[in-house]
Length: 131
Image 1: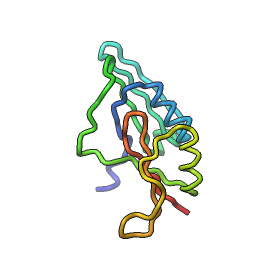
Image 2 (image 1 turned 90 degrees about the vertical axis):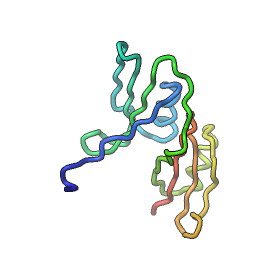
Image 3 (image 1 turned 30 degrees about the horizontal axis):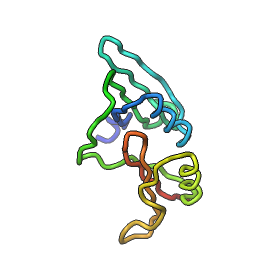
Image 4 (image 1 turned 180 degrees about the vertical axis):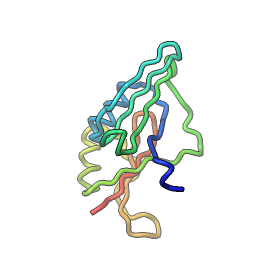
């Protein structure tokens, strides 16, 4: 059954579309892949990612006109990104103004080295060191 499905994207709602696109493209190195403005529906969608939608899972940023705040809720956990050198990555992100919510270190009860940052909307992003 796994051949019937392909994971396409994850959607998150954002307060300021340009600020969010800037965060994901300038700080995290993603590319803006496409943008669709739907005035009748009062929303804009922007898709960002590390590769085209045909071959990669991407992130959909949804901006609803006139909405400048969302409650995070308790169900959503985090997005996760692999990085080669977590300490250097965190320092680079810190220097660029990213909020570091957990400094690099081993995961509790394990050896995998992780850190957490937050995007401009407060969404948590786990950085996982991968060699």
